[in-house]
Image (cartoon, rainbow, N blue to C red; front, side, top):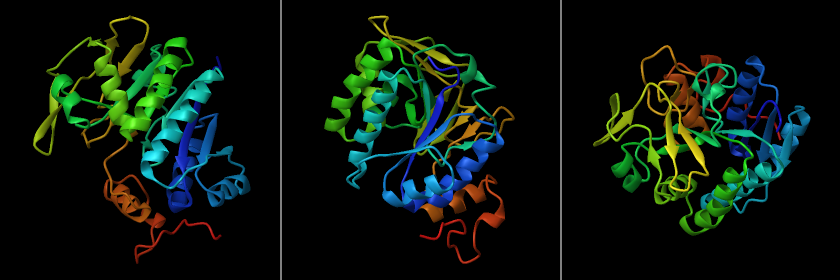
Length: 269
């Protein structure tokens, strides 16, 4: 097993301005191993020109196919003995989670950040859900088995977060706490249960170990705390809208955007 996990993300050319910001932040935090999985030729060429480690991914352009391709990459990395952290490019790293906070000291096969309420059936049972926008996997036999099962499930469901949560729910696993948290955050017409320390899932077979990271450290919803390590706030889909939203939250310098709303970092292709 490698000493430092490989940090990976997925990107196409429509999000290159956001990718550049994300990569710069990881450089500032001195994250040693980063790889971009490129969903089109333009992104691969840009990464190559910038000296960024990159690999091509064959993608149909449909969102449900992206989730299938991502699970295939995760499975391949684990099969190769590669520990990895997957981070969406709109997950802003405030501090280095590989060096500080709850994630760096955990030994579970899988570590997940917290989502909001999707899928709702799992939220109804647990009071929370796991988010695939920031998670860590170790290349253990149990993690490899889980992702092999996940591949077939995602092909049918078309949604990786739905599949992850429902597979773990169906495993008969029990969390170390819950379903009522230390505190709750409102989200639409529901409450998201939260804890200040990681929760641990024990599956009925006992083979797979999973932990949920504290929301205060890995935030999906804005939370006033000095413990934040990654802020992965809910934002609109387009790159320009994401940049404006992150600017609104104070996570980007104003110079990153043109006054007329165009992306200021779009590489010339």
